[in-house]
Image (cartoon, rainbow, N blue to C red):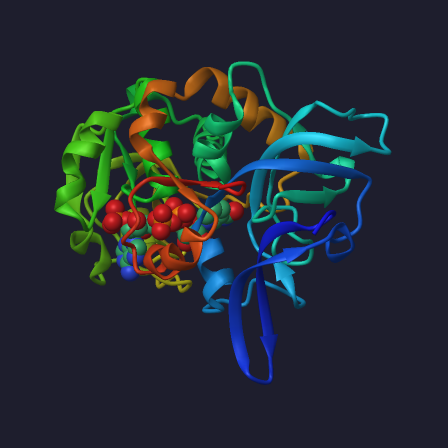
Length: 330
Ligand code: NDP
């Protein structure tokens, strides 16, 4: 039917939680002054939670899922954007309080959009996606806390996941020595190719450890949380910094104040969803210069929209490697 387009919509009724691909119209989208023809979205851990209903992501129903997208402006009532502009959007409540990127069209506010930076095309932007942009926010957090390559090794946890993979590639390109923590031995060659110099089994970090351990890391990018983050803090060098962005292993944090008060360790929280525009622009600009584009190809698989229904439980089970680009028009 003319005026309709495809979307992946989550719904919650008395019959339970469900997600399906269906035809919708612009009237089904949240309000905004810019309409975008979406080219690609991606699959992130949070998308897995929203599509399966295993996490409380969507705040109202029915909700178009997808926490990010790249596309071309179709129409705009804002002076900041014109038809034909290539744009990207991460977070800002997409799939939570605002209809998201798993649709052939999105309607958003102009102040949510970032113009695609030079040196990145739409496919690369979504190979990066929210996971990659969060990885860059973590790297920026380490830099802001004066962690430099000469200070020692950086630990990346959940390394074979989306955030972890991009963090490994960026840190290695910037000259850091990267140690990758993963639970999947079959990803070692992949992680080495991204630039990790050493791999450690994630079980060595996920068991409860002493609150104060032998210092090993100048900095940490942690996507796992819980005991893994507690051990990472306990193993961080004097004056080091830990960028915490994830909870793949749990939302708790069973730690003590010892790493902070005896080693001056900084725990830097990283949020991508409501990150201010200046931080977004800095992260995307740095992505244009500091992410090795050749590594993106080995990190990213492309799938049609319907495949997201199948992959959503898999990403929650830690079975998805690297990044998944979603072609919403396939
Ligand atoms: P992925 O599922 O792609 O990666 C997560 C990785 O964590 C897995 O690949 C696995 O890595 C590891 N992992 C999974 N389960 C466990 C477990 N029980 N114990 C230890 N390690 C585990 O997800 P993303 O990379 O997209 O996201 C990573 C985390 O970051 C998520 O918690 C997500 O919610 C969060 N996030 C936060 C953002 C923010 O704004 N703060 C933005 C984006 C993501 P391996 O196989 O290598 O062990």
